[in-house]
Length: 319
Image 1 (tube, one colour):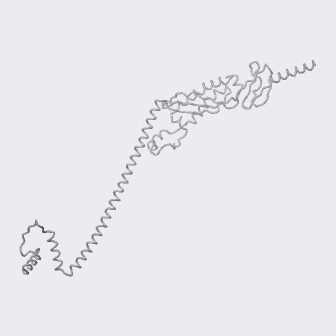
Image 2: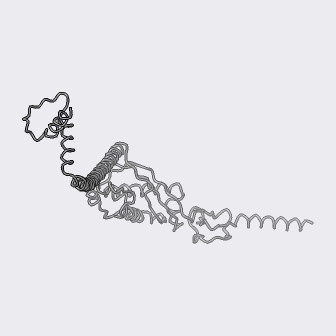
């Protein structure tokens, strides 16, 4: 019984030793083993079960996957003296865990080193280029430009030709910062500008310019609309005069043909008895020329009243 107890005790001690000696590395981690504060052996970068000397060796875990760095937004002047707010971010990873452990030791210190290196690089490149270089990455024509705005900004777009662009600026930031991070065992995978915005004073000026541009475009459209309206009204007046002229000509032609036909009918009718025609025409003259207020002094042999004289002579003779 006593031997059995001793064996069980030894087994328990071995289990404790094995438990204290074993450690696990998963797929997102890498481990640097230290012995009395100094690095011992190669870093463990593959996932699996590993062993160390209990109480003497200590595993130090570091992430193997991508880590994020989010910069502190700040006010930066561009090369053309325009003040903007710039918010940048980056992605990084630990590629040499031993160098990382020996220089920065932990993740908090690593992020502090990244702040000290990336922020100045961002500021240096933003101040070295004009605003349009920071905002755009190519000279592609903007789809959001209205037709009127394109006409107004035709000259401005020529002066805003992109030579470097935002993408190359961020690549330059990465190239400038990476050599300073090599000694920390850190690889800077990517740097991007998350947000660019004007400061309050510049934003008000830009908004005022945008409003003025939109008003100019609206006025241009109104002017074009008035011109088109005048054109339509002019065409309407021209067509109306043409229609009226053609209608008047047609009416006059009809009236002329009607008058000619009437004269022809009258001539045919009165040609049968010219004396009767002369008598009827004289009566019409009497009707139109004489009334109760008319007074005429004519000789007795006037042709105008020959029918009245004949009628009067007949009336007297008959009386």
